[in-house]
Length: 536
Ligand code: DGJ
Image (cartoon, rainbow, N blue to C red; front, side, top):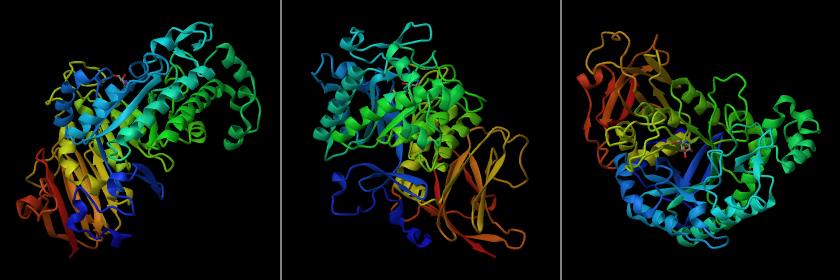
């Protein structure tokens, strides 16, 4: 394994040679898996999405001039933009792709990739992006009903007409992408719906839904979950409503996704509004949208939605809430992709633990200068200043993103982030350890100052060979040691600083003296080191 990774400077280059008979540009983006780890292949090689998601109403051609400066300010390599059903199909069966075309064309001009978010039947547990001809026809496109029989602001998924219309529109979008992007692959992935599920009800109580709820759980679902057959109540007990909703939302999204994939098989994903992982018994409709792909519904979603490549959490939590969510979604059967993260400056540091959990994507939300702020979920005034932490991440990692994605896929990368009340953390690499400390000065080894004041420290260490590592970070000190330090000491054979403006060039300089005597100290200045250690 290690010999695969014998480091050559080319490994750090932005583009690696492609394999197979297809030319790089013709190869479809796809997600691959190995030993429980995952990678997004773009042009045949692992790729790390350094994303920027615009505000909900910014994906209009005349708004894009206010989007690009923010995306560029954070050094994004991928723009995330909604594709609106209401704009695409204003009259039934007639499609207009002008918004999508502008997004694809301008992404190419700005040399970034694109992720499209299909705002169809669901947008944040409601139906606001459905076209007027859907909204106005309550007979053909029935609404959900709550337990009191009141019609809700959300379409019932127990309607063949609704499924047929949403699927046809999504398939039309994917077919169009095949035509305009089948060779270039500007578009890397597509999100199917946005934050599916329903708030304020534990399930749909419309007549069709009630009939289904009173019937039997599909035998194959019961079998897959290791349960005996029976009604939803018999099989799931108190979770009957939640499980029923998850099954039906997943089934609907699976059908929409499958219709799209049949036209153009891009990676597809579904995102979730979350409950706080500290919630003891999260309740559908109260703590999360009933039906959403949240951890308590994973088994159902994974069984039903086979055309969905991954389930993605939308993270607006800090500290334990954020870190536990990463644990919940980074699974052997689920690639971690943080395609929507609060753009609160505090959250920038979570880019590193996302990488540490094997993440293939990280994208703050609300990255544009249209003047809209989702404060207090995100920043108060989105600007180059508020985005500086996100920019620092991507500025640092963008030059080596291919290498980082590859090392992560191979299982050789660990990260550390400043957690509440924590001063340091140890990362383990067999014979070697790296201790990451936060809030220390660059000079001096006289112990920790009280409280280690920094809150945004983060670091990354990746093993390149038996004694060689790639090390970088922001606001952190990284110190190496033998795992068996009691009996053996270490020394640096060399500490080379990579030229981040051209990682393939010879090292910028070698660190020694003060720069290594007190550990490897990373400030706000972007620096990446390649180090070699020896036992002495
Ligand atoms: C999560 C949704 O996915 C986004 O589209 C947006 O509505 C945010 N919530 C809130 O700004």
